[in-house]
Length: 113
Length: 112
Image (cartoon, rainbow over all chains, first blue to last red; front, side, top):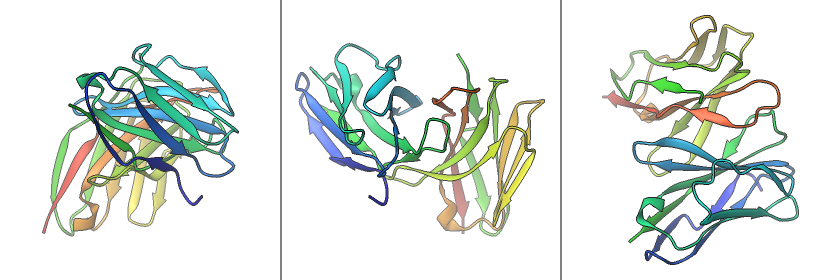
C-alpha cells in the first residue's frame, strides 16, 4: 500500500481482556518495528522483525506481550490480560531494509478501562 | 542506555524562525532524524542527516549537526500555523543498529 496501515485506530477494552493490534507495512519493506507512545514516556521500542523473524524482542514490557509477522508482511501485536498501564498509542513502522529510514503508521490508541 | 534529550515546549510567532534543539549520548550514531507528529496522527519523517554531515537543507527546513557536542537542531524558516505539532528527534546507532531512540518531543506552538 501507499503507507503503513494500522488497525483499529482506536480500541477501548476492559481490564483483563486480550487485544490484537494489526500492522500492514509498506509493500516490499522487509523490516517492521513496533513502538509504544505513552504520556510522559516518549516512544519506547518494543520489537523488531526482519522478514518473519524477530531477532530483538527486548523491548516487550512483559510476557503478556507477543508479536508475530506472517508472509513477511502483516504483523500482529497481542496483549493478553490487559492492564491499565498498557493504555498508550501503539505505533508500527516499516523500512525497506534494516538501515534505511522508517515510515510510521497512524497508530492504534489503546485505552484499558 | 542511550539517551536523547529535547526541550518540551517552544512557542514562536507566525513568520518567525523556529529552532528546535536536541542532544544525544550515543557517539556511534549513524543517522539522526526529525519526525513531526500532528494531533491524533502518527509520526511523519521530516528529514534526516547522516552523521558525517554537518548541515542539510530542505526547503524551509535546515538541520545542523555538531557531532563533537552531540547536538542536533532543526530550524524551520517562516514558521506557519500548520507547523504547530510535536517534533521528535531520534537517533540510530552504529552499524547493524536498527532501533531508533527518540527524545520525548518538543511541542511547537505557532502564534498567529
